Amino acid sequence: MMLLELKSIRVQYSEIIALHEVSLHINEGELVAVIGSNGAGKSTMLRAICGINRLSSGEIWFDGKKISSMKAFKTVEMGISHVPEGRRLFPRMTVYENLTLGAWTKRKDTIYIQQQIEKVYHLFPILKERASQKAETLSGGQAQQCAIGRALMCSPRMIMFDEPSLGVQPNIVARIFENIQQINQQGITVLLVEQNVKRALDLADRAYVLQTGNIVLEGTGTELMKSVMVQKAYLGI
Amino acid sequence: MGALYALVASGLSLIQGLMNIINFCHGDLVTISMYTSFLLWSVFKMDPLVSIPVCIIVSTLVGIATHKLIISQVLRSPSSFGQMFSTYGLGILIASTLQFVFTPNYRSVLNPFVEGSISIGAINISKPLLFGAVGALLAYGLCYWFIRRTPEGQALQATEQDIDAAKMMGIDTEKMFLLGWTISGFCVGTAGALLTNFYYIHPYVGETFSNISFVVVTLGGYGSFEGSLIAGLIVGVVETISGYVIGPQYKLIPVYLTYLIVLMFRPRGLMGRR
Image (cartoon, rainbow over all chains, first blue to last red):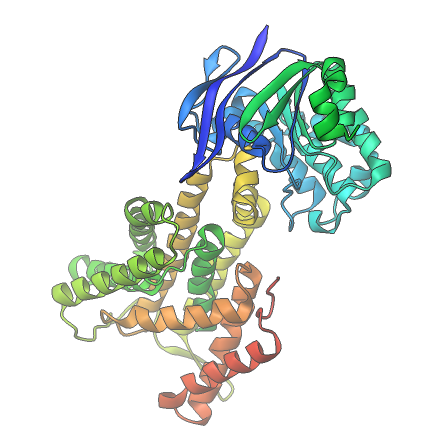
């Protein structure tokens, strides 16, 4: 079943067109990667999906409903969670406070929040140790785990990961990708945006290549890995 | 006086931190609150203490109206001049309107519930001032508790620290802005009502509080709620002592001097960050 569908969306920042006409779809339970170089419009696409950037044309559908004119906080209520580029934790709040804010849409239900925090601690034990530490003092890898944990707090149907390997020390990167796979195996749909093309394609069921605001290629992870264009442009083979 | 400065300034600091807007008409909200209190006293013989809730409601409503009608429009513009001039202009509009309606005469409330003074040894403490200080500290404490201890307060802080990330958490940031104006209105409204007990009222009285608030906010450190309290108290104490030692007409000189000296050594203010 199709969970998310972008119908030829266009996003503009005043004069500059960031996304020309992007169409893609993600089925329920899939792990879909979007790869592309810096400035291809990947983050813009994610910000458009969650409602922070406005579309100048096109439509976005999620779970059978049109979400492209919804405000950002509504899309979260629909079940779209976001692990943004650069993590964007609330710097002067503790790890614990950051996690609770992740469950803002379910803030009335304190029992649920406690259970969910325990689940996150189980997935990332380091966060339990650092619970009362300010988020700005975390290392890159810890901060990334905290951001993923925060995104899981609202029991989303789909999580969008924006460059989760960026600014994370290399030995943690593999762990982060494992976590993403685990999350997907729990039945949460994943949209992964990465510059680390090889890892992303290894993980993904399907993938799209985004270039200067256009989708130029799509296929399964293995198909794209073999494609001459991807090998030349992104894998350096 | 220091506690009242702290209360007024923390409202200013909150709006500044939350929306990155410097609200030049903040002091004029104090004036509005004072006139509300004065009006209720002169028409209905309502004591300034009784009218505190009304003052809070009025200044909150004015704050929210400012946000809805002006700030939310100005926030969309990329230039920061818009917000500076619009709030400054609004301040002039408020003061002039009040001057037109109430004339520029100095007014004060006569025979309030709280008056006179208590003597402890050689020190005389005026009751309205003491009452103002206690009331301001209570109001400040309430705001502090709300911001630091409740989920809504957490969301407010989140919006202040990273607005896009707050949106991604599902926080309705527009509502948070309104909440910010409400808290700011609460601070200013309470301060205005407490001031009416002992302070003279005239259309430009808010200017004094605007200026002092900027000193307090900068001295305490931008966006630091705790900093506003400490800086407010410092400013109050310095003002009182210098008013006593060198004379009331020069009392603001040491205040601004303290401010300049602190900023020379701590450019980010006492509790400021990055």
